[in-house]
Image (cartoon, rainbow, N blue to C red; front, side, top):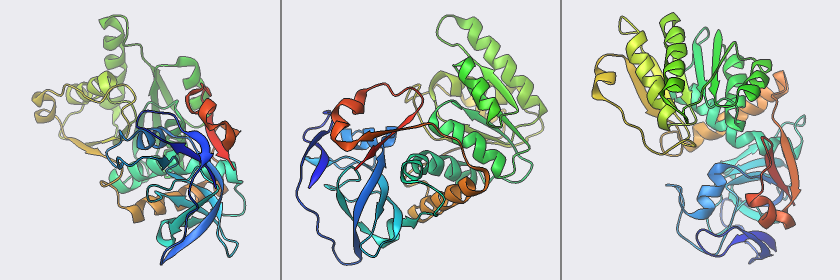
Length: 322
């Protein structure tokens, strides 16, 4: 069969022949229709994600959408190496598949599953969002961030604060439901950091219940500092770390924890069970049917995987179609 094959660590996948999969006990052989390109998929293919197995050659693709032999249209997650979602066929345990509602096309179903899952899991499984909570999304202009804004509103947030570097993109996020947007520039001098911290302190003084962070790095440090300075009377703020697109490490002074009620946690594979992840996908699909979640997508033939793997797709989520 044809597939997006990674032959060595660090290489982009190539459209090539790969051995035909055979379904084992309890597995279904799925004819793949679409598989999205996420940062999670990139890092697993490169062998750099903590959940990846150093096994090459391997088919790229951590999830996808396809059809079972009995005609069910399903989303599937975490194929067992060396097989992956970016192939003509993939064997999958039934326990890792979710039925897709009729109102969602294949490209959209593939595109929103991973970022929607990460947002839903962070808000529901980890932060335990309640109706009326105030939620801050740090990194709100990416695919997951824009969905997190929409899902926070869907799940009952009374106010959503969106932060990111791109001021123009934040205006688009406001149109998706963000009540307050805060742009920041931390690259040039300390003034940008001070402005960002001051704007954050105003929001935390008014009350913020949950922070969902897709950036980590300097912006996460400033957010935690603002919590420590502005939140009084032991009011807890649940800070959920999801992504690290701005850096893998932070400097966290102990005083920031001692002087605040920050509840610091992560959200991802291992911190969220597979059952909860799949339940999150079901929730995202249900939300799509009710409020028609917005997300830019770009469908690309799987045969073009090597070119598209590193190409700039802007803010659209690339989805390889088979």
